[in-house]
Length: 496
Image (tube, rainbow, N blue to C red):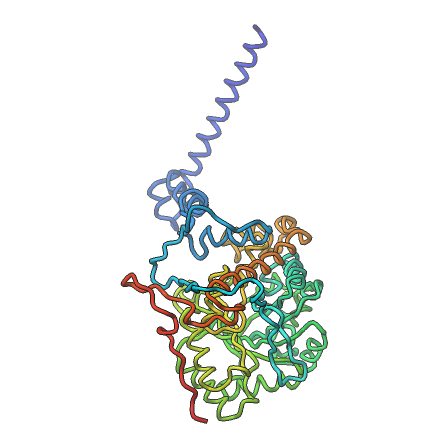
């Protein structure tokens, strides 16, 4: 009996202490909130006003896991992310009871099933396609689905390692992004596309200009197959990036060609390029120095600008053309960018891709200039649509991030990515186990190819690149769908 009383007395004292501490804390917070001047809610509603910030922060979490339906979230909904997750795990992607997608949404692509599709022994796989046939070292690209640019620095060491090994196994290329070529890109032995950004990271001299010596050094790597001159990316066209000096470690400095602690500032465009003529000269110079195919990456703002590019190529001759053009849509992703650029600048890939393909074909450059589509193309239907619209290749960054385990936490710019993909904090990086994740990267790429082939066969094409715009219908606001071939009829060749 005495022991029980002692326990009750202890609990009562503990309770009083806890309540006292909470009351004291509330009084302190009350005084702080009343005296501070930067938050009107907290000043007018001391202590209680703090819950607004807490609930706002938690709202993102609750919406993602409890309230949002499978097709509601942006930029990628749960259904899209779950498909990638299952594909990366090698699980079956069959579903029951019917589609959860609202097929009446304007812009929805609907593939036209053939009355008599080819039987299995009539179908083929997409053959490797040559890029830069006139370069000293052409690239025979094995896969139509590849990994888009993600810089080491923007993503972590284990993320790059897993992508490299996965890309090698899947037979797809890995784009370095504008942060330069790291040893981790090379570890897996995958085909590499070296991206040259406006700051020339990895191929710059001490003054930040393009270094031919370093270009040759990069080109000497046998797995570096092509060079991509980045003019703009979808999430921030016309805006260069900044890597704070605090993040420029000795390793990053060596890779990017910076001093330790030096801010890595990317201009908003290449200072050497003031016109399309300058651009073609620049492309030709890089091709001559490296001997490898050279292309450009850009975002379409208006048809006139792209017409001017092809006019310049036509006037100079076919040999002056870039070997490929990567079209990034305004819906493209990034680790960090101003909201107005993310939301409002740059044409969507759904509009830009058919436009550029038509202008290329009208210029008679279909077999000379390959078109690469990029921008929120992560599921088989997205990739199949792009190939039917005329793309030769499709690249994805965020799709492969999902295969690595990305949960769309939207913390890419805060170095607190909980899955270890976009952070350099060892605490979070330890969650990304390379030996597990590279297999998911490879499985995702392989499953995309397999499912796109399934779509192609269902519309009567023997292989994915044989699909045409007539194979796709686009839902309109009147509730009817229209063939893509009617929305974007082929342009006639220009007079020579």
